[in-house]
Picture 1: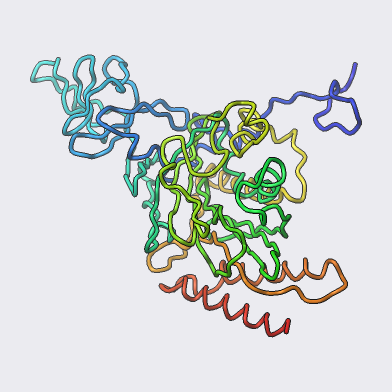
Picture 2: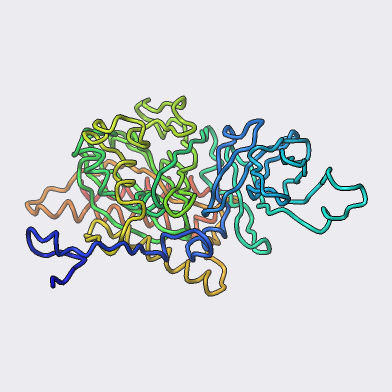
Length: 456
């Protein structure tokens, strides 16, 4: 009898593979009372775009629960359990009224908080509606997105406002894309900078800019909100330092997708803010905003008109293209969805460039355990002008390579530059100052001036 193995070490040995179907349930499963689901429920989660909610109710799912999202005629959004508390009819067929949602079957009227406002088939003296309540979750609408809180009511947190939400001249355009796979394999892509070199540049075609095809120096650094990756590339006399930002548990911020490293800039901020929301164990939705401002689109490529329901303005983010086209020119959607409905971590062979993925999984596992033990999830205590500071950025500085016969000398130089700039971006008392951005810019300029003197 052949012994089956998870990892193979010799050619032509597929027969010997143990075809494991065991997912890392602690991190990936979100339905029922799953530990990851219980952790994610402790945060406000986006459910839909405001534009998805019209005069009719919308059937949705979160954490495997069937729900109905609706807007009263007065404009207030509500989120209720899908099936009527009377006889189980789906409230997706209900009628939106001034104060709530009315079931089509027997006319029960539910308020946005689950209060039963009317049971019109009962006699006037009936007290049933005072003794029963329908399941409901709190809802907030903010900048074109609808958020719900799915955790214990007594532990409902304030809705956090991050600094990237409130930047002068920045237009936040909502978009949403559904992925038929587990939330984690989509979310952790943001901490995988090596995939941009291959998937987005070398394998099919240059999806962003040629500079993305240069394998960068990589580092992964904890922050008060979670972690950042740090990539550093030389492009002529310029050094491009970039960080994407994970804000635990499932919020990510991405720098400028159209950056080409050509023009100097310091602490240029976010192009994408997105949550990977868990619909169920094998479905998720990316919901968030594309940021439109001159810094985020230095080459004039962005297209606001393409951002919306199941669409965004950069390549390979959904499955709408013909299958053979996707095979020839795959995008993020194809690479992530094809990892199986739930990626099996036991069958992976992680390498040095996967350190960010491994670090993110460790951070999540630690927080999941913390909540399971009855503690509160860790949140950033830092505030700048009343907002929570974030750390995604693109910085391009002019620091020519020093003359050296050692091929590793400039690589070491890039690592030093990246560490210095990252320390400025992530650490220091200036992060609690109201003029944090201005201080970060000034510190980066001072550092670059000192480096130029050293090189000259």
